[in-house]
Image (cartoon, rainbow, N blue to C red):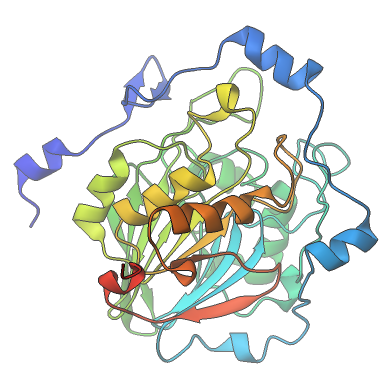
Length: 351
């Protein structure tokens, strides 16, 4: 059993007057003047080109035959990147979805909001049997009502949903029958064919809202999923802060982690809530991940960095920190890779 003193030392969310807040001094709300400039005055620099150019520079691997995906791998962790923060993860007999968004837009309505410039490589109908969905927070590019409806139609009460505190009622109001909400450091179990998988809600530095009046009324989180043989960390959406060292100490090392690397410019508005590739590498090291995959890029033009900049900067950050290039990779939309356990020191380039 975890020592009380150890639990007390872990960072907890601040909850006051019905709203959550981050407990770290690295968090601050951007000044309104800078936010106004970002939304209304800055020129969009993401430079998303035509579909014909995208087909070459950022190709999609269509997932039209899911026979291989019907069974989780006998060894290792299979991760398939659907796009943005959406991944399909399989290991130790369990199949998970993270922040699934299969629709063409992420917004209040299906006809309004940022539009995908790289479509989903698969449909909900082509998914293998999914045991659970983990949701990081309620922003529209991470929690999509159209996708939730489709998943409910396909799997119904057999699908387990794990959400941060305060989000359960929204899921239930939209037809989800098997929802569990947790706060930071709270653990639960997922049973799949006789195997027990540990699921833990862990901190991250972000915020929440779906409307004008509900800012921070629900919690945000990263997630840890540990099976008998392998483990997975999902970073969700986050700025960099000291808590990732706590996660690494308590739950690491991880077989594989999905860590955001995009949607970070302009930095004076986004540094507290979205990591850049250099900071993503710091998270990779802090949590003691053996292998990581870059997510949260290449799908929606939400911010102003060039659409191909995140993976380029990621490779440079790995080199600058003497890490092997394959320690932290990016995948094509629809591409999957099986990650095996490996010694942690194998990531470091010998000098």
